Length: 319
Image 1 (cartoon, one colour):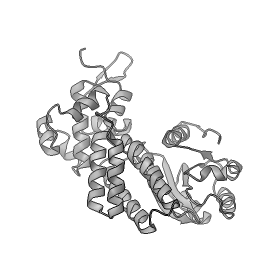
Image 2: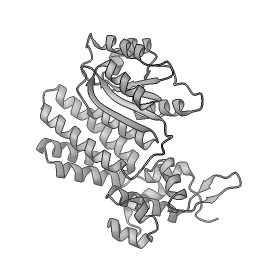
Image 3: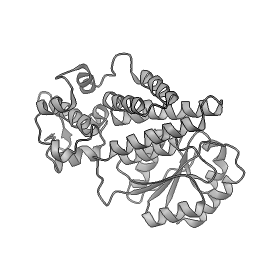
Image 4: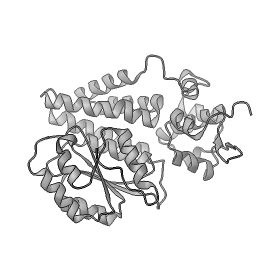
């Protein structure tokens, strides 16, 4: 049929929504009604992609999906302030980036807001980026580069600890609010996210927690600089399938390999471990020794999560 040419993968790329969220919005709330192919695969029309974009924008603005799912497209446009067939909607549907790729501009604006310690301005940049780039674009094109840039500035002595803590607090609050409309089922696999003892930088862990949550995982976020016994205890109590460690700075902590060994002793063999962050590769021998997977970016994290989530799946070996 004309216009019914968007696969689930295509819709995920265009809207920034996860497959899990799209299915929930379809089955539980009747937000869209895709057709099925003879092999039972979903196909979405341009109008349905447009509607999902509008619903996504409305939930990011704080509206519950349960209260807006049956609104008309016109009502959703009024709610979100999006003009009909505006360039943002058209480009998302057609799969094109916006002119000039705005992610670089968002990064500069976010850095400026952090410098001024202006929470309102920083939140406004994050909101604009989430609407233009989608959830995955926000994480990969703004939050991840912002995390790296702030780390560079801090190591160069050009960013104060207060400014870094400010950025972490604003990003953590924004991403928590962003994830609120996307309730996960109780049977979703569990992931504990933390930084080991001596690792005080938080933004990387926040990024991992948000990415995993958007990927359909039930995340228990512990924060920074926790001893192995505390991390292991939390993972066991949460019934987690996996543990993610963010290792950013320093890259030469003589105590960290011992913490990693202790962590492995406290945890069952069945609980998979992934580590990432700018300093993680410096501890590769210690990570290899405990069977941890080293994820160099969000794609590596997603590959790890997918492998663990498969029935009888085991994470790929550390590289």
